[in-house]
Image (cartoon, rainbow, N blue to C red; front, side):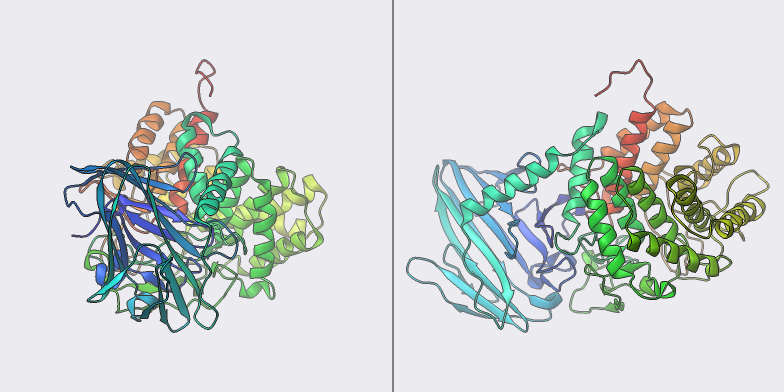
Length: 595
């Protein structure tokens, strides 16, 4: 039976991530980076595609779980007929250590545990050669295939068919550690780690990071966890911010809308930067700006909408038939064909985020402002070019209204940088283009019924239009905006959850999808800022209720089956949650108690 997406916890060392099921199985792990080939791929298949189960032998054992305060150290408590024990899972935060650690701690009575390991490298295309390499004092196995080598130290594991299995009994106060360490196959086997020390360092690191969250507000626990998810998806060495930890979790169960999100979208990363800045993490602005300078170095005409974690440009999309897909949803895709798309909104998101950094006190350098000027100069050449929109349509290009509004925002931020910050630039040209784009939207992007349209050739609406007041294109209570929301409620909310758009062929894809969580969070902010506070509060309560028991959100939600859908944890969902919470706090009545 396929494990529900919401049953997964995430672990992270800020270089990669693992998914651990409620049943104690690590079903997804790519080392050493988020976008490396999987060594545990059961998430997109079954145990035979790689997994590591660690749980009581008792099939009736009951589990509860939590993160150890504000960390990504996962504690799963198991209760059996014979006793109670806890499993502590974490990915050591230490630099140069690519590992996954699992500690079993006896609480009361005696509990029989079974560890079952199936390593399958390169998206289950490589079954490794495995040998015992331990000693009388330390049991260990070494698994090698192609460029990958893994050492697993801990209780003795014996080969059983295509798995390695260990079994032992845990008593009160006793700890049993298992550590999987990755390294290149051509180097010496990865060294053992000091388990106690790395657990303490990992706990302290995450707790210290979380303590610095500012202005968490009335939804402090969810906002803090969401910001921590964003940090878990930010590579500690390169500064690249991936959109999610997974690939090919379906937007519709059993369907083919399955995409690889383990890359850095300029849009999502820019929005993450804004959230970081709003909550006190100014150093993130410096690091991401440095990443941006490296990634898009060269001719601005070659700017892409997305890059690899270190700024790689070549991300070809291909199908991997070694993994059958989550619940049979195929194909499984590696890479993302959207890398070659033109999406006119992206430069706008970058300019808005970098203005937020300036406003927060991050000084421009000669190179950072030169980058922004070059982007605006390039955008001036593309100003009349249709695009494929924020949702990466795979049909024909259009003049998407959201994209046009972000083009307006890009020039607007450039103008403000010159007028308010004394920077240099082609301000007269930018002002003329900004005003022309606004006039274009006013004339062609508004239906006779009074609402903004998805693009200039349709009367449909699109949830991305909720961004227009967020970037200052119009007021939240602009009559056109209110009419747009009313039209969304009429056509995009059949179950009370907001769809991105109606899949009527404009996206060039078959099949359907579920409501996109970020869009409903955007609607919370729109309600809050336009005088519909009761609606905003009610929708926020419904949305936060679909986060799993650890506060994690995927990309979409199926309101019929009441389950999460799409890649997880999804940066954009958590970003939008933070924005919605901030909007509710900003619009709270003066008489309301402040956090």
